[in-house]
Image (spheres, one colour):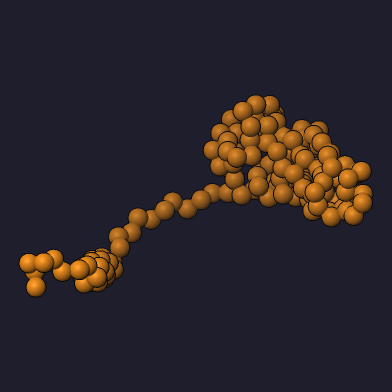
Amino acid sequence: MIVIDHSLSIPEREIRFTFTTSGGPGGQNVNKVCTKATLLFDVDGSPSLDDGRKRLLRSRLPGRINQQGVMRVSSQRFRTREANRRAAVARFSELLRGAFEKRAPRKRTAAPGRSAERRISDKKRRGRLKLDRTRPKAGDE
């Protein structure tokens, strides 16, 4: 079981792994041994997640979930397949934990009046500077 939080655990039978050659460390082995681990989790087909959590995952992690509803997390940091597998599982649980945590609503605030005044005065000063750089016209002198 992969424990996400106190109310959610995902059985390991719901995730799959694929292994490919890695671009990370490994010396000569990097071209021969498949050490890059990619974790695949079927979000849409998971019985562990209710519909609300599935929607939340899709909205908060859109770049990690493909059109078929499969979430991908990969790791190629380590030289061994098992270490990369553990790193992918750790990253997976971290991503889910972050996606499911409650977020405080944003409080709308107004910019201080002084900052608006400063912005306008900076714009005027910049405009005068640019105006001073132009050549005077023949009749303006």
